Amino acid sequence: MSLKHAILGFLSFKPLSGYDLKKAFDNSVRHFWTANQSQIYRTLAKMTDDGLLSKEVIEREERLAMKIYHVSKEGRDELHKWLSSPLPQQNMREAFLIQIYFGGLLDDEELLALLRHELKATEEQMAIFDQIYQFSTGKTSQAEDPRAFFLSMLTLDYGIKSGQAMLDWLNNAIKEIESKNYSIRQN
Amino acid sequence: MSLKHAILGFLSFKPLSGYDLKKAFDNSVRHFWTANQSQIYRTLAKMTDDGLLSKEVIEREERLAMKIYHVSKEGRDELHKWLSSPLPQQNMREAFLIQIYFGGLLDDEELLALLRHELKATEEQMAIFDQIYQFSTGKTSQAEDPRAFFLSMLTLDYGIKSGQAMLDWLNNAIKEIESKNYSIRQN
DNA sequence: CTGTCCATGTAAGGCGTTACATGATTGT
DNA sequence: ACAATCATGTAACGCCTTACATGGACAG
Image 1 (cartoon, rainbow over the protein chains, first blue to last red):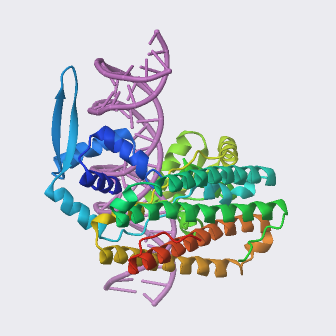
Image 2 (tube, each protein chain N blue to C red):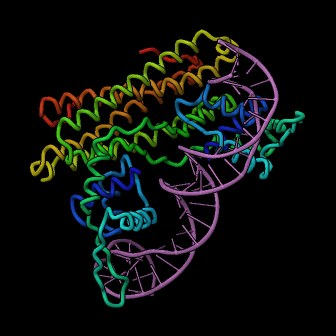
Image 3 (spheres, rainbow over the protein chains, first blue to last red):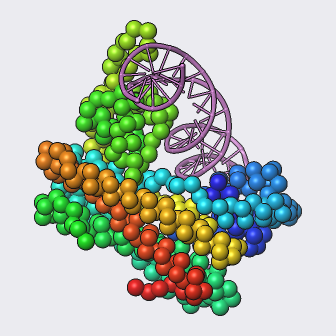
């Protein structure tokens, strides 16, 4: 149900087409939620059926008509209700940890290759976060609505903090395996 | 594909029934991967069809026959191949951050309620991790295969480290909103 | 003239959840 | 007597991904 509510969120800022919504996802929440095109179109159709959205059709001769979606009163109510209700506990899904858990079947070099690969990927991710951070802090949106800006930066900060925890964990794991120590370092 | 490989992992330790597998998931990897019963049975059937597993049928008069699954040669090969190949970058899915991102539509009290709820849930989760940690470090498995034990503890350590990052983030967010400061604290 | 962007969608398949259904055994 | 555990599965629905399909506009 998160996709539905994220769509309501974006459309509550400004009515958009399916295509624009896809860009909105990619440009602003990709670091914690992705949505693909086919999913977005399908969900928009369903939400329109359910009365959460209304569809404004803009005819363009010789081409498929463009559809701009607007949030209805029910949509706004539904969004506010969802935003203000705590979510049920989400189960963590870390496929990478399955590889570690069954890593007894690998030798040290294979294990280290996995961990180093993950380290590199995490470092790259962190570099991207930093870039977004730098870029965002020099924007007008900050002055326009400091509170909303703060909240969007919080989601980025979450990515940075959890990425840092991942880096610490990886570096420790690599060190212990390299030294063949096989013990968890206590902090 | 992770479920499939986790099943191969468990069965490579010891042939099990679907029911036993469900318990194996619940007892040992629940903190980073869950699987439900119906999913497990469906996947076992598929994997048997695909030749990754063989099925040993144990007849029990008057009751449904019990099926014990064994990993085939192909299954072992597939498992090793998967375990040693870096996974493609997984997209993060944090529904909770969608609520924060669109939190401009909530007032401070509503936002704080969300954050405090998440704080409580995370603290409870951390307490469970600590319990497992305490319980595990006093086990025989440690001496039997210290390397495998180390790897299983690493997965737990990941949960603890990322939970701690979450707590730090939540506490900071709560503090900033309470003080109406709306700024990200730099560490 | 080739590729990218704009803009729409459909199809198929796998993953995950919840609910339903059966029936013996073991523990309180 | 009742509940929990053992042990099997089916049905239905929704979510998510990948691939396929169309066609104009615009830039290099």
